[in-house]
Image: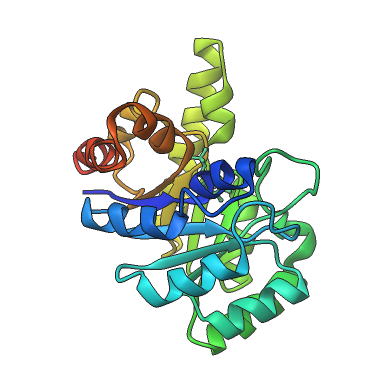
Length: 239
Ligand code: PXP
């Protein structure tokens, strides 16, 4: 049975479109937990364009399940993580101009840096997840760099259009999940998943948790946040 963590950045994005104090991602996190989410995710970007320090501080105080802080491994954000001490940090690459995270970490080329950052976080009692492409080399190097969890980037699969391309990308995720488990890593997945394209994942029991944001908030606009989260939990709990 797979679990669901809900990304509340998209609530902050709506707030920032108006530049006022609502809707509040912290309130959304409470609703997500009441609806049965296993964890709350927020991405503190270097430019803090949606989630702010205030959100992170309040989320740390009120999240009862698990707070997963996504961030790029840069010094000032690492310092923030070491001060706030979320349950989990997910390291992601970040490009300032991107609308959302575009690719996984390049652990192969930056292993020593990620190893150092991971060591510091783990020493402070924070678990560390690496957001990586479904690539065997990245998975092996993640283990070597000390990751507890790999979050497999599902965006290429979600964006694929031709059936052959969809199947090819899905196979990569399936193989990556199997390798992760063989290496004793916990395997999560996320990015671009919605109520339709997630159904195929019932054939990958190795993935124990899904990180989902946009599609849940999009559905919540129509049916309410509680119902949108319950519907997604119902799907992933069958895997
Ligand atoms: N996982 C990671 C590492 C992400 O950066 C994001 C996007 O913030 C997600 C999961 C959730 O993606 P989506 O909003 O497309 O569901």
